[in-house]
Image (cartoon, rainbow, N blue to C red):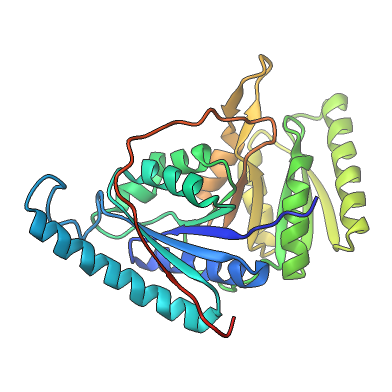
Length: 304
């Protein structure tokens, strides 16, 4: 199945790390012919001068200042990358605002920096970043550092014996085709039990066949370890990968969906961008939050 990415959301606090995420998102938007949505949230923002229920005049001044800053950023992006850029300004808690932005704008992908500037630092790392990854119905790419390249020429695809890892193939195929990537299939098992080994071999064979049908070059390797996340990161660094794709959740024996400890470790410790994908088995009941006003504008380059 072809994955159509048409709307990409990037949270920004105007920090260096969020700028890294914007650069990466712009490249993705350009390749996929997608629109970019840049969102800033006032809750915890270094630009929040007053509480929402205090001094309405100062609040209006602050909102205009941030909207002008977003407009300047959007104009620069549009001119450089020739893409349509939408700006959003939210006033509630970050996780809730982003959840609403995903639903209201039918977002297909989030690209997010995981370190923030002073004043919003706690919002973009740790538990809140994990909540965004786990709560978003669309994939999330998390970025810590300035990418050495804007491309995804080397993609690592872990194939876990405990997950239906082949669900990631449609995404890896779409990204590898657009970026002309080589995909590194990494079969990972916690033990050398025959049943686990057979399952991983089957996953590797099926994934390799799928990629060959789509003319995507690939390599394969199996690792067995008690610390699979650490081994996966070491492998990704050794081959100079620039994207790791993981499933962010797994199905328990009781049929419920649980956070994936392997994926969480990868997201928290990887210096390489990580794409977290929701398994198809996951069907989240929509959570309704009280919505604060979201201010928006659009900037398009006519030469697109």
